[in-house]
Length: 434
Ligand code: URA
Image (cartoon, rainbow, N blue to C red; front, side, top):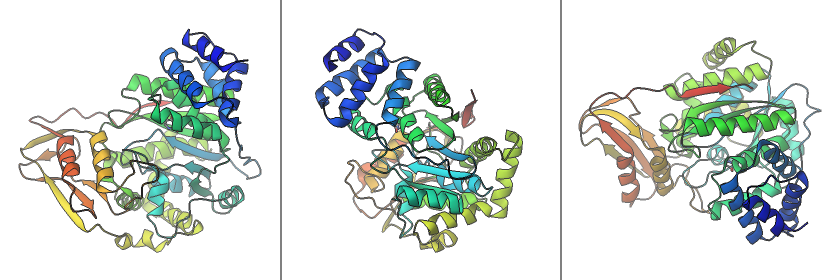
């Protein structure tokens, strides 16, 4: 078999066999397929696509390119959740402790932020002492002992995705539904859980720009998971504006804590209640979504979710006193106010611009090796639908850098003010079960 023939066949829009796909994946990992051929192949997939069967084979071979975690010796249903990413998405930090507080087993591998998107691991590290790199044994022990672990993926998991994702990033081949689906699902399936909830984002700040393409991605990922016997479900939720009000690492952890205290912003609470209800149903704690939502609300009111978040940080070496005393998180040296030039209603807040501005303030990385300033970020005082008076504060920016003119201009430009209140769409547009 020759890689050039496989590229040629995909270029002509032909369907590839499992043997051809496994030849490509193995070649990526052992180096026998050079980057220029891998890149040409990826571009052919971007233009010609792959059907469900080809994508399933690609996922299967990527998943098996490294270690596949076996969690079967941990009693109970092991749950995982994945968001396709966005701005202000601190969901895992509020949601997973709530779910674990009912005795469900949460085994979650997370990632870091890059570009305009944030990553759970960076957010967690804003609590001093937190070590997100657990060995496989430590990860499993923690899931068994306290019911929850959120950790970085070890280098042994899905090396094919690491290689392919890095290539896609620099060859403009990220935005392809079969490539995104196989990338996400191969990692999720390699981390060993039984049930997975996918939060597929759509909108300006997301990979999928509209609901139909988010639905296509979600449906494909569900089918791939089901072929391998997993209970995979999905919600499609908006990333037209940032999620919640806080964007930036420590600011987002503080918002996650506030949410577990019953003081969360309404869009974020809506997401937590709905996603939590689905996960409790997948974990066989709630018989349906109504009961699930009720349980999640109770767990917020009783503080049991907050107690579990403290346990999670303590288990991973973090100073859990920060959870009781969020005022301990470092604050930035400079605070800037972005004020409305005119009155009206907030019609739009471009998440991509807010994410990019947060990165410029120091909250994110433009290159993988960049350092993060945990205190930097943006707090959105006004969200879509809110009324504003001329001169009122729309948002606050925090940074340890004084010269942040470009970031401030970007935040200002992200807000669109209209004379009439815009129609408000529900945050969660769809729930896809099968
Ligand atoms: N997240 C992933 O893990 N992979 C993609 O391809 C896109 C988003």
